[in-house]
Image (cartoon, one colour):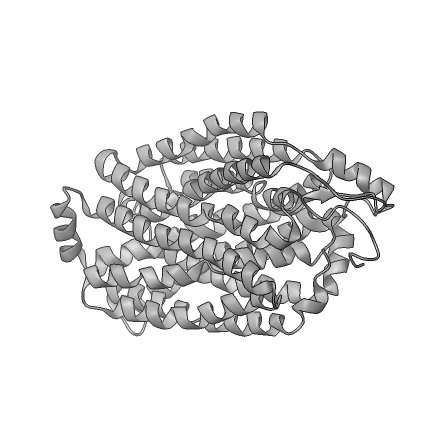
Length: 457
């Protein structure tokens, strides 16, 4: 099916095929809605990622191994997050998407609060599973809503702006989590992370609009097909090699990013404890609070710039050649691991922290191009389901396996035949996993070959 053969809603406007398209929402409202959805996504990542800066205090308090940290921060969360994302996205093809997003926000925020009440590893894993269940309803549903709000030529920028919630939430999670953990303990950090989402649920429910009624009327007038069933969407995507290439390329990127997140602070605490303590003391902070603030501000700010720039650059370059959607993340994925490894090998924590800004500037360039491509490879009635399949792959591989892989690799290098010790074990686990980015480069470049022919909406 192509855009020409099936006149239907194409995002941001509707038409019955006989007259000019009518905007679904005003430009001012679209900007407002994007800000609200970006803030929801910020809370999503704040609650998801705050556990990474709290990993070392939790490990010491509950007596955990690195593989348990990897399981808690990754696989236990990701299995429910990814699997439930599929039926929820199916629901989002026909049900009110605003209600789904608002309800999901309330659920994951409530379980974040409960994480702070956990008395042992099993209880903490159970609460993290609850967070994953709640967050399953956010991203695919929001992607579908944004694709309806934004015109095709601005879709990468719109989705890149939404994706700023990833680094911004990480920034707030690291900075706030570290500072609160130092002052009041890791349990209080979870409590204060969850409460804002419970309040913000009201804003979502009362102010966001569901444009589906207007779109349905236009689709009926144009005799367009109805909602996209999962089986129909999957069948359609089988004929879209680009979708699978970008899905697994993004999964590799997420595997690296999520895999590094729980162990970056641990790396500094194990390898540069004295220097970190000295830097922290200058600011009147503890080591965990200082690292949370430093990693959050540096990495988060770099990620925000990277996310926005990736969408803006891709939309600008795509006006000449749509293949730029793949070229931008391909080049970034090739360069990043070499800079990252250099930073991790530096003998100075101060310079390592500063150099890590560069991989941060490259690390999120793929958000806008990948998410926009996935929405543009399918007709409108399949967008939420295709987004859920994309998110399923990215998070099952990336979030589910990344932290667990790095944790196991760290334990093996520390205690196995090489017996490097915990400090060097985590260092080389981070370095070796970073070079998986070369695989992502190859996949993005393969997708570049045929993306022009496969874009339909």
